[in-house]
Length: 457
Image (cartoon, rainbow, N blue to C red; front, top):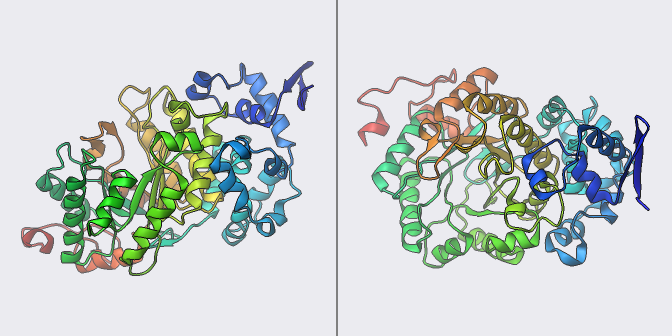
């Protein structure tokens, strides 16, 4: 007999288990249809949402989306659960939790205190019964602050990952993109390069180039070469100046294994980076990227909807105290998020869920060229996420990544957001921009003449 039932318009809807309720309560997206877990109609979706609103939060501790004995991500989430932090909301249903999150008295400090007591399934569940404006409002109240060579996530601040990718890893091309980004006030989150190959020699060369740049100009930021974690570990063993260790992660053990990643390997990488002691104001040394659909594309979704699995990836990230986490929201393609509407909703959900779990969330607001999306859709998501207090976005020359072949956000877009919402860079980086004559005290970009110090040297 089905455990979860409700009646709408004279029809009874029955759901076999909590996993089915979560999946069928999700807003429509192509990945869930592809996986065969989506609601068959809007009415069934509404019925699942009605059922979900009455589910007690505590049940998610007893009924994880993926069984405890089958999955080390589930074990990490449940073994690290903080019962004391959970206590203030432990008697709420999912619907009552939504009301509490939207309340005036649920402040940033309150959300920070409860975060260790929340599981990914809990925050995914509540997101499914929230409107877009609810996701924006609650996330805007949540702050997650991290530090390495500068301080990220502070109120009224917006950081940028400077992404100077090049199809052949040409140092001159990369350097030109970095200079372009710095002159637009970008790069405080990280100067992060996706290498064209995973060659150890190429990774070490790029790490050394970035370290020289940061040291020469005394830039209070951090660098990262986004190679596979095993390649980065080898680079550390060879003496490479690694600031942040990067890895793409997912929400199930099998999906992570498809990436060539295990949880002990992530712990090893974190310890290796910590041992280098390259941070100056903090020791958050990990950088993770995620994206809805990764578990499905790996055949490792366990019949769970893609948004719940994405929230579980943030449960993984939380265990390693990262400096940066971002959802590359539209990167996998229209098989998983079909159009601009689905990408916008997914980006808001991802940011909301990560923030509630205490993860320092950014977003690569992006789409592939075969998706039913365009730059206007990305403007909408970018603006909504900035209003929601997103920690950082991507700065790509012209918004067109010529190595990864997808559409992201540009250096110009970051200036739009900083002007619109009166946001400033990370404080240490802002001070450097003033000294480097890039940014005025009024938070305006300064004219760049032939004698500018970054051009002369």
